Image (cartoon, rainbow, N blue to C red; front, side, top):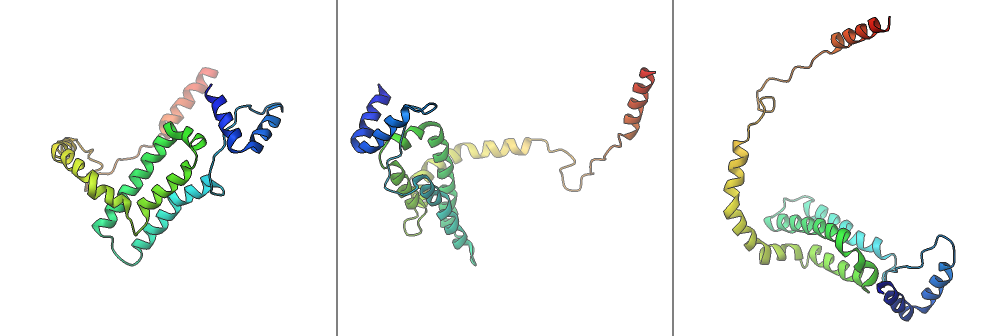
Length: 188
């Protein structure tokens, strides 16, 4: 079975963990099927989360301090956060099994996100300018005018338009008093 082969692999990689798992499996409430993250990093999920989110936020704040961002910076950080969001979505829904069963997965993920965000490499900007921008231009040329036309045709409420009248609030106290009076007369 699938879990049996992973237990054999775990026993070959780390016999003491397999022994501990076998001992704890006899305890009530402890699952016999356990997964371990095989990683060289201490606290691998924490380290990778800091690299994936903390390091890029620090780099972005440093890039913004005291100067305006260039087109390269906008492309870099927009693409980085889009890739990061898509990665989290795919990993949460489909790749979650790889974290436990693919050795050094978290190290590979960390290296990928470092490459995307590091100022010497700017991998996200490379992906945009080298590969994604061409495909996006075709879609943009075909669909941009249609989308903007649909947005312009949408009717905007008068209260949202500049200079429009504010929505008048209503005082419900008369209606509430009437309802209370009716309920009181029914109770008598």
